Amino acid sequence: MGDEVTGSALKHWDHPAYSARLQAGRAALAQLLADERLDRGRPMTGLELELDLVEPDGDPAFANDAVLEHLHTSGDEDALYGAQHELGAFNIELNLPPRLLDGAGLSWYESDLAAVLAEVREAAGKAGVQICPIGTMPTLATDHMSVDALSTARRYRILNEEIMSQRGEDLRIDIRGAESVDFTSSSIAPESANTSVQFHLQVAPEDFARHWNAAQAFAGVQVATAANSPYLFGRQLWAETRVILFEQGTDTRRANQRAAGAKPRAWFGERWIGGVLDLFDENYRHFSPLLPLCDEEDPAAVVAGGGVPVLQELRYHNGTVYRWNRPVYDVFRGRPHVRVENRVVAAGPTAVDICANMALFYGLVAHFADAEPPLSERMDFAQAAANFRSAARHGINADQWWPGLGLVPVRRLVLDELLPKAAEGLSALGVSARDADRYLGVIESRCRRGVNGATWQVARVQVAEHRQRLERRDALRAMVLDYAARSADGRPVHEWEV
Image (cartoon, rainbow, N blue to C red):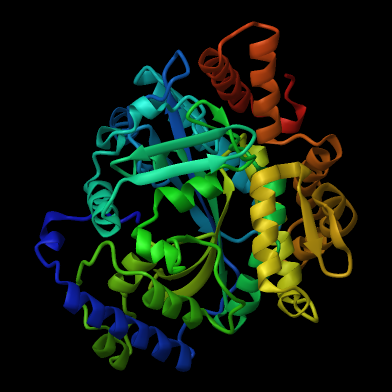
């Protein structure tokens, strides 16, 4: 979804042709796989981060055009790290350049991320607002939920029109947690409350299934340890409300389709896979196109001629199926590859927290992708999905089912079982012991103290309500401003005072 939809492309909308070209793209990818032409180099990684903008009073600031304008007039294009619009007018997205993790790669990510956040913070200041890397925007109100809350970028307006057209009725946001929300919206604006961080890992095609399956198996652990989304529309809901909001906020299913068991576009999946094509086939089987734009490329001819196809249709369609671990086909420096895009973790709170979440993901996926027998033979897929749901509801206090252990508290599972395995995985990737100790140590401290972004937010709001006698909306504003200041300070969230 990072590509802008241009006016010239819109003139070529043709649904039947698009379906045919989707199949042509799938066939081209299958041929690249059969010919072993996809990159098998060292495992490149990447990071995308979404941010919220807030007003001086703590309310969301619908100012991404102004902030991006200040960034793009700074004169240093290399410093932008791919800054661009996201769904909401109070969101922006940052993309750090891909790199290897070996040596001090994690420290490199942290220093680069801290630098770019400082740059964006400065640009936001020029626009009179602040940045806030958080999972769901706590001060977003139902009053904000109109199409005007969406970015001016054309692709998001078209996406809104297509989702609402396919659905045929207003979206319903109905979430029951510590408190509850029941709200209908005539646009996909509620989905803009969500911001996340995505970790990318390029893998050899023959190893893709093992990496994706492993990532699915421990996705619940990631959500539980990194939960940072307890509030939506002024109510305390799930520890990681992003999960259920994403499912409901992008739901294109009509009522009869929901009743018949059709899949939501924000989807955990239905089974372990045997190869990357399984996921693209599921995309075609379960989900109709939202951005049916046809490129001029003939992928079969490109592949037959020894070239590298772009596969734009396949990529557009894949970009509107919101899997928590998504397959990606891409071309980097003229070389095609596949990678796992891990999307389960909320944005923030700080650069060091983000890199700790990154270390846990890369370490565990590296370890379990090579483990024998694989987790997919030791755990039912339905159990992995149940773990994910439980972690979203309960966060760091969730229980997780794990092979050989049964149902155990996630904090104990991480401390006793998974941190040593993550360290082994990072070592296999060439990460220095110093980096592994530093970032996995952050995860360890969260688990020992029982503190992550979600628990801190709830505790801070309770202080504002009970000690400062603030009404909920003002308590949320106070918390958001405190959160933004502490995020800028850079200390990991488990060290934040309430």
